[in-house]
Image (cartoon, rainbow over all chains, first blue to last red; front, side):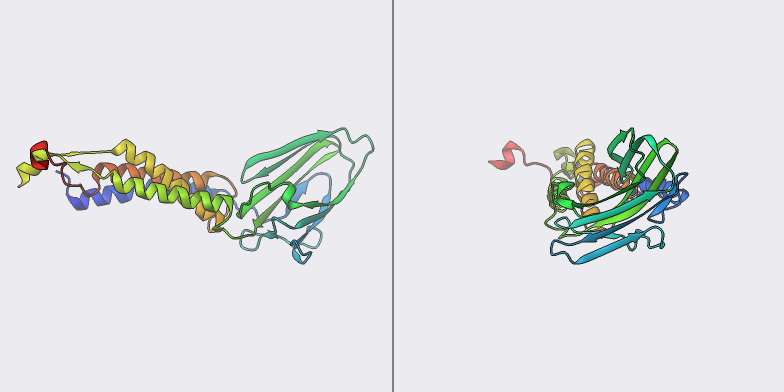
Length: 199
Length: 69
């Protein structure tokens, strides 16, 4: 016979099981510090973000050691702009590059770089890369590998906005509400015989 | 004895876990360097839902045809 307390204890232990499994795994991996740049090609760069009105939001500078940790990430306005400027000491030809967000590859490509270019710069509209309004803090990582060396970098990015009206916020509210309503309806039901026996 | 709904509870708990996970991400409470923390929240919701469906506080039995009339 399982007592009510026993059920509660079992519920608590089983509910905590995924977290107990996930936490040691997460603790074992050192958290990226933000704007860590590595590789063999001697890369460096700066990133500046601004809101829709052009007001500066955040700055990264690998040479100056201005980083972006998960506690103080690089702030990005979905309606704003991002200006980048990067360079490598060595020429990287026949390279491939990948960009991952939260550990998932979101873009990749490559180039022969026959012009032996070692710099890249430009300004992009963030909206071109965020077709739907999302908010949150994620780790973005980029890698370039080819003949002549490689470069890697990672940075914590916070996409700003109202979390309750963003696409992931609204989806979260809808799913949370649906889950709670559904769970309220699927409680176990006493059978008539058991009720009669208990009475 | 009672009719239990463990599988249905797990499915709804998964929906709830996904919703809570998305809210945690959107409010930056959960900063993601990988998707595993989100998977943990969703799995935790599924386990809680299964336990709720199987062992949650029971509803009274459905009235029989005689009781309804």
